[in-house]
Length: 107
Image (cartoon, rainbow, N blue to C red; front, side):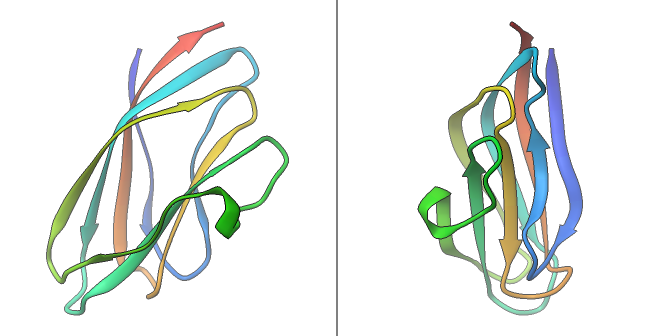
């Protein structure tokens, strides 16, 4: 089943975008990001193992720039198994919209 994950505008605190349930697998095919501010920003996307918090050692993308008013698409795939999560943050409050486009399959 295809699904779009997102959690509104992200900011300077890591925000969970998606979490893989106990009886499913998720394949993220792409991420879509949009800078909604009038300034250039950076963003980070994390793929955290079950029970771990976002940290530099689990960043998929770390501090990548996104220019003002620009949308950016990043291709996957990224695979999530039970308990794994995707998180995102920006260097400004309520600044970047993030969506993950994925397929969810039962295990």
